[in-house]
Length: 489
Image 1: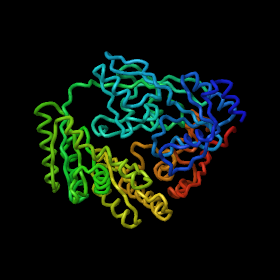
Image 2: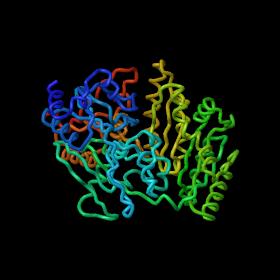
Image 3: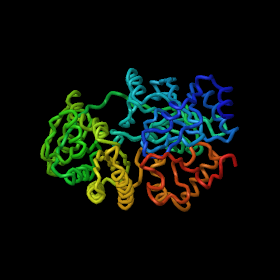
């Protein structure tokens, strides 16, 4: 409790919360499959000074500190460990500046993605990164995981839009990295290093993000329905092979479609094994010709039905099945969310392997995907009270990652390593590369206090998700990486 007393001396009493209900509610993000434990306290920062004060207390007492945004993460990256300080930045919601001429905005870490997008739209500008959680996820959280989204196949992910960051280091010092100019290569690119570091190197307090003009795009959507998932995969590969870069290319499979249809009654054909939603946004006749080329690829891949739309309301209707897929599945039971990325040409093969894994493991696996860049989200659905199904789910989870890596893919495309993907990261980050990760971590956080045990593997985590996740409810926190030494060393 000395840590709590120190925090209350540095912050207002209502910013340091220790009641059981709050500590339990903030102990994990949306990855309840990953281990967690109640923190010693939840701190609600409201300013840069608050973050500095909290980190200084953590450093002085040798207490681990876990930063958190809105808690929408799907990998356990914001899951608390026993006795830590859980630092919430959700109250830091100021949009500090919008520079229309230079096309950038400066925002605090707790600003919601959609709130930023709506605000800059009033200035005729656009912030492209659009994770599925955009209505409820924060810019700080997006930076921490290098979040992607539907439009990233053409417009890129979070790192492509972060010009600079204000961060608090593990000893409480404030660093301002990056630039305000369109170009700049002075020194190491610390900004890009911090994007995607999952709170293990520094705590993001403020971000300077690049904006694009809002005008200059005309959306057209082509939707294809397929009676075989492999045909949809072939269409994805064919579109990529033709050099078409759509503004979105999303896949929704039979299980998702059936769940959405049962919930919302959208009239999706019962024989639909998959749906591809392709958006192009070129202007005028160029956009019309591109939409025609996309439709031809869908037809050549045996699409059983093709719809086209350019009216905004009709586009929203066609994309409704994609937007509702995840909540529709959650109505069926707990969902273990995968996040793999394979080369685009391997999408058909990976979809086939996922189907085979579902049959062999006897589990329900639904697929939604940012198929245009090979980022697939197999969703393993189990009954809430079926321990055997949960055990089979973790087997399927590991198998999917193994097959992805066998096809030249990577274990996470946009959700981050967190805790769920530590074993998979152990297969990808080895040897010299692991040495570099350890050296970078030590340079930023020599005592290992910032989000310990997350983002990259410690020794001995090659045995699969079963080493990290207890699917039956015990919340055993992971140990900090051995290479960092014990807390307080």
